[in-house]
Image (tube, rainbow, N blue to C red; front, side):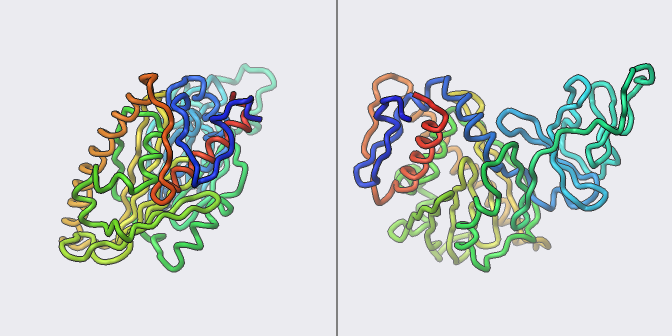
Length: 358
């Protein structure tokens, strides 16, 4: 039910208006999104190359819940809530390699890589205390094309989420790419402002002059599917340091971007921090065996990414301030250039209605 609020009513693309400002500024929306969107969705955690050996582990947060993904001695990936069963201490406080056990950083309780408690310091006097009966709380883990995902309470399988993306990718293969670096950018805006911005190339000629030189804006196409949108454009050949090919920009519900260019995969994950703050984690993946020329290209890729991100952060901050000033009324969306924005905002409206937001 919409609770009588017209800003949650279903819309048609040709007559659509942007999401109301209150969803970007009202702090009551935070808990709704945490519990009804992020806790129920698959989140990208790492590249498989970051978890290649037994004991390799990474930490992250999903819907404010700390999580831990680890490769077991049997080669299986397992996910756990990163909270000790004793008194809520953290099991791991950073990513790591080749751990033999998982040891709580608070009181030293020690778990196997399978999450089963192996030792609890000085607990010999505790009545009815059975070490082997205590386990870390598991979470869902799945992999796709060399990427590792996790979820707390998923409402669908990872395969269902990625079915449309899989059809589009065809024989493009980045499963063997190696993780090279992570760069995190704080952005002073609501996470949805950043998502809206990513989901259209309408702003590229006006905000990103150098990026606009690389893309053929006239041939820029945006398509939507059930759980993703796709923007793609031919790369302009002359002077393009990425080389010839097609740039593919996937956005997967609710907060993941896959940027696929020749010999490069960049993933972006938007993390809500506050109603007017988010963090965007960029992970860079490249084919193994880099030549000196390829290394130089990757360094240029990083510098260019920093430049584009600074431009996006500036415009997103300005939009956030406008959304919170109390004077903005939702404007009409461009059906040709903002169809993915419409698609994303309709998914949000659906989630808000399901949550009973009024």
